[in-house]
Amino acid sequence: MSDAMIRVPAEVRDRLAVIAEARGTSIRSLVQEFAESTLTEEERQERAERARAYLAEHFGVEVDDEESAAMGRRLREAFAQQQGEAA
Image 1 (cartoon, rainbow, N blue to C red):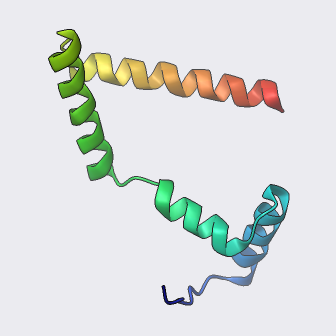
Image 2: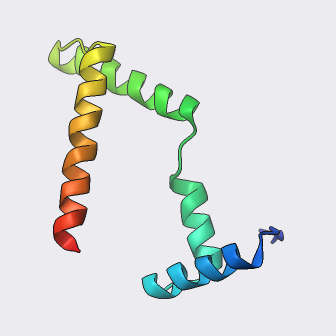
């Protein structure tokens, strides 16, 4: 694998260094983790469609857009609450 340089303002670099140090990793690993774990809108939609198809095929459950959005909100709220309790 070849390396590439990414130019960012010094304050962004410094912030990445602080985050990486707090996580016990490097900026390189931090950026790699971000790139590997962050989905585009298209990828999120594809994943949601696969999940809906799976639920329909294996459980006979049809999930519409409104139900899917409501579940997403509940998951985000639960995650935010968990993060707040961990702090």
